[in-house]
Length: 357
Image 1 (cartoon, rainbow, N blue to C red):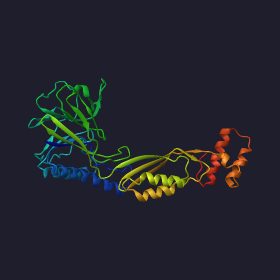
Image 2: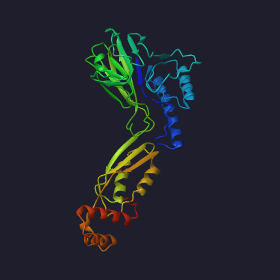
Image 3: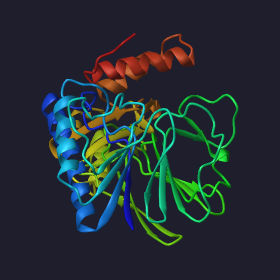
Image 4: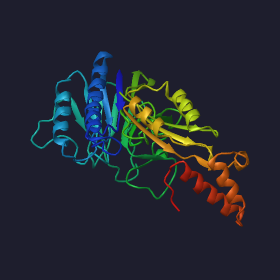
């Protein structure tokens, strides 16, 4: 049996933190389209189950009702696949409206007690809100047991929050696969000799705190054997890249930046951080870099974290205004710290940059 495990789709997110209103509109449409494409992928690859481990939606936004209806209709018309939906901390009451008939292929989990769905020898159990630590294990050794939960895993602990999942409670309990949600980055690990746990991450990144490839996990179960693969699937990718200017000029930095970003698709979102030392005596205007990047990518953020250093000896004999300014300052009765600060302020002013004192 082939199964898709996804989580944290947040389909009705406003997407207003980084994007313009038009960009946010595009991203909202893309997020729903990526979910639809994932379902099509499932049909093309003979997937029988799609596990949604929480946060299918973000919250009750103004556009939530329409999107929820669209998702419900998609599920209703994809009757070749069963959708097992476990609500997350953002889902609230879920997406099934009171007036709607629940499709036969949509399987819901309770927030009060464990529920189990059976598919041959495969048992899929879950509860949307952990009320307490696991007391009475419900899994039998002869079955292939999948556990769906939404929360933060912990190896050990006593002071647990409501969404904490203590792994030691499930180790040694005949669990084969823990289908988790809540963490927006793919990760997996061993639960015990028999089982593993996995976060598929989110299907599409929403900000620069969700960088890298996003997608879902494809499971293939044959008897007691499990094959698990992460499938990158997002339309766009967030990148966060640091570029050391290495005392280069603004022009040299421009070429270095363009070399770094040339392999990044122009449809992606990129946050570039300029770091390292730059010479205060050099012209440092990165507005040209910012404009070129803005024209290149769907979304770009350029952050200047460089540290200005003074190599005044190179300018003391210079015949320019900068050189004359440094020679005058060096004749003043100042401490080294005061002299450095005065020179920095003066060079900034000579470059036409705004000075804050």
